[in-house]
Length: 132
Image 1 (tube, rainbow, N blue to C red):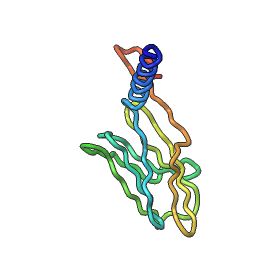
Image 2 (cartoon, helix red, strand yellow):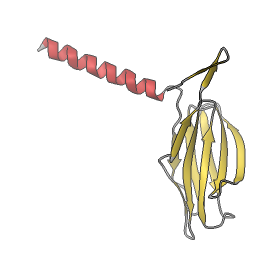
Image 3 (tube, helix red, strand yellow):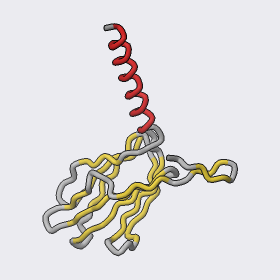
């Protein structure tokens, strides 16, 4: 009984450490509920990112450097955008994440799941270090 209890406790600690490691240095775009032609999202514990919006032909439409002390919260009104598919790209020095924006006659939708995530290599003493 003691052995299985110790093993269970060890397993819980190991899983907690693993999930904590996966979050560290990483960011997750949290999609908030927008209304009509608005999209909203937040980046918790992220202090600096570049936010860009591209059309379906990969033409840059909008870009900004966003900063926040404890995170970043953004709301964009897409009234002036024609109906179609666009891409929200959020990038910091570690990774670049791409989400799809779908604009219809009725509303705008920002997908909760990223359609791509690209980790950037880190330079250490002029040598490339794999971050994965």
